[in-house]
Length: 434
Image (cartoon, rainbow, N blue to C red; front, side):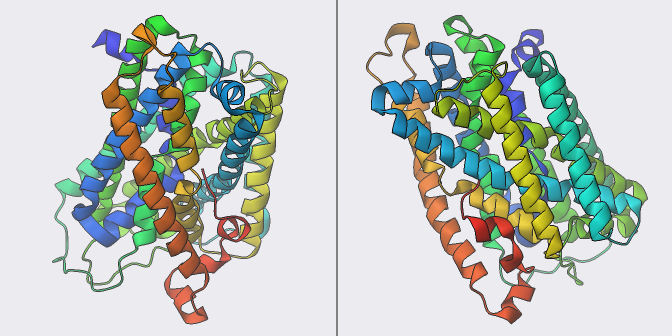
């Protein structure tokens, strides 16, 4: 057991960024809408994520160069640049949902009302300035991030597990009825996209190199992937089951138009502590995802241009800061339009699956090269599951594109019914996401 926990490292960072506020909120919405029937989807998504993270970790350990450098040397620099631009775009718009969710975790703690535009912007700007300061000032960024992510994952796990136990220990308080409204398939796609995050898996290869792992540590890399992503899937399942217990089949359905709606609805039945614990989990998720998400886009974009792939290089830091600023700008623009918080995050998370098949294909391509022989050879089973993951990502991309298009082009009355999704800047600006 001691050796297992010692092996946990790079993948816990991936798990922390994947289990961000968007994943928490979409899981809550799916639990309220679909109930326990959605639980097998979480299990399948977690298995696919384990395989993809494990494949990326192995590539980071067996290749001397970074992933984008390997792609550039084998297929041309334009291929690596296309990959870098894709991931940077997805990450930058995903970052906007982290900003909005940070507010969602803070506002319910400050009272029942919503803060005005000025204070909300001030919170977002302050958070980003502090994060950028840490980015440039921390002497050993990787080691610091790994330590902080372990702490935040522990806080999230504790918060949601406590809520889960307390809520299931008390009577439900109502006789559940089968919901008759339309199924929110977009939220389900968003939950799949945030659990099976190929963008996060792609970055695992870079984290393994930051850790200093090589061919001799491939077993540790596999253990790290399995343990960390299992924790991710377990927490997602706990959040979904908690929402199912509280909201599914309620005779007076709650319209989850904001993070505050989700948090405050826990209070009447389960006390003020449930609301604050849930908000604490949201804040931990937002903080864990905030910096690392931007680091994914910044590092890969810099590497794709041949400007460096390590966190001690200047260009990965500059690109990371740029991703943070873009996300902040999009979030402030969304607040100015007074869009629905959960609608923004749901669409942003669902869009994470669009454009990601290219990342999955890149990992499979690098994992099947003929020069990987002997100990460097990737196990066939890992490749098979990764190929299944690639096929799933293609299907999800098509379904999500169709759902987002339909939601954005719904008539005005329907827009109100679906949480004003047309006001979501990420989907207006681009239908791509991390």
